Length: 271
Image (cartoon, rainbow, N blue to C red; front, side, top):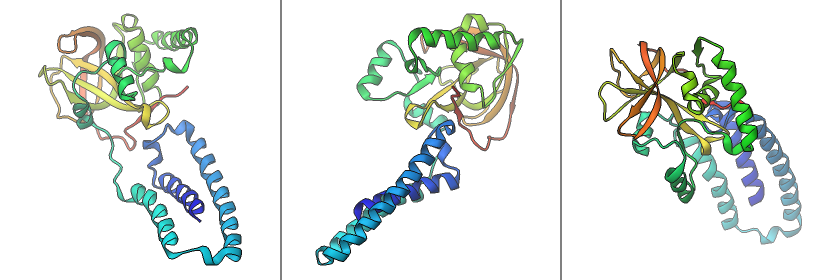
């Protein structure tokens, strides 16, 4: 019975996330077929366990106690309660501030710290190099970079956000001077009043390898409060950030206007 309830609970939880539209806040929807496959398998296995349990009742009904039934119900209600009762909150600049204002590029001492903590949180630059061999990664990123370097104005959309952001940080000098258009939410630089970051939270495969990705902006004629969604355009330059002690690709703003938050604030890596 317990196995049936656990499997049924998993099926119902996954179905709930899909029907409620919350599934895309946990995984990259390009891999949603895996969630559907696991949901179908859990349903089939639950039915198998139900048949087994029914047969056991017929032959060993005197062994089933009320306490076991209550425990089974509790096991079912716990995962469903977590999924249904706890609100799903979109990540925003509050999350950025909570992580600490240092934005490592996931190398050196920062990478060692993440390994020790068992985390894979990424900042500023999406890094998919761990999913390829070194030569395959370089070849793939080179091809992506060349396809956008041919354009005078690069429009960063929800679909290509992660890919473009990765090659901008891989080949920053080659993108200097390019006109860039993007949307995202504002995070105010705590050390410089006239500088703001434009971010979006992105998911490579699932929420476990998510990160906050975007660009530093300068030349702001106006500033917005944290979490304000904006559409920005400008020219890409390199700027040394004294507080972060690194040179960053920076958007020198030409246009900067407030917009409505999109229905889905997340972006996903498309391979």
